[in-house]
Length: 381
Image (cartoon, rainbow, N blue to C red; front, side):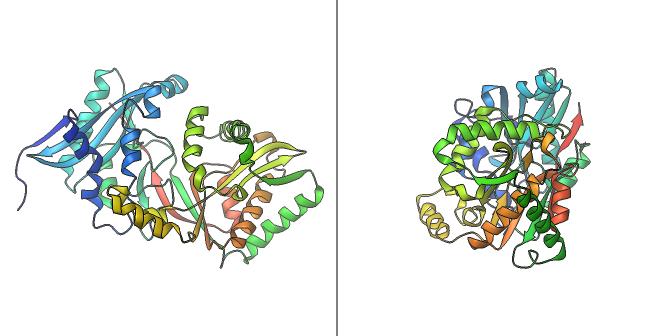
């Protein structure tokens, strides 16, 4: 029976409303075979002002759209004061946007987020970012043939229509994910050219690649932070990594990371490049239902026993003064060789902005193909 009650959008004000906010995506995606449910505990922590890292430098409010007693959509509006100060902006982010396929709901949610921002003197909305700039951001606009890799998101096709109909425009270049089939593409002419470059660099002797030293975790984190912020600073709209953000993300992943697949590129012994290979545990998490129930842990354990088919490369960064030295080619060849030895079948390279001057060139030289595209939007208020 259709729900005919008037539409209302209200801030989350009770434990029951918070539960409705946290669990609403299961209503949107329950019949979507490509959706990987988020871990409910992580979703709760990220949106908790007492525990979420975002709230150390920002504020946010959470809204649920209701028809009668039925939740029909959610959104979050927030201000990242640290980013606005760095970028010289006065904009609000939106995130946790989900709704049933009804444009009226989406428009009401965007109205609520915009009103929240205007009350604080902010002049634009941009997103979606779920109080995190690295995990599952953006609207999927291309690539509905396979589930997303780890730290990538999935949205229904109608979200793009709703966002653009409301007046949002692209905030920057699209973010893209590349796929490289180790069984099919490693023997192609393009891959052979990259291997020849890597071989030449290796013979010269100045550039080398090593595995991460987990026994010196804090020291490696500091080296990676320096490489990341130097190597990616050339990208338009780049948001510098903070030590606490990198440490938190890496710490969450550390129990499942293989140090042999976290690579550091060095020139004359100086760390200048970083390439992390992360097992695509979305292949297991897709079956765990967000760990909402005790029996979900058993299902996750069962699927975690199998090695994922995909190894995900979440970043590749080289300090700019060492571009053109072959550090990137040597790291990429090394990660591919190690992935083959460990039984991975394909590599995901995600996400990189389509204006990235290094990663896109490297992916093209390797012969990787684009398989997903995400878009971040902005609307002036």
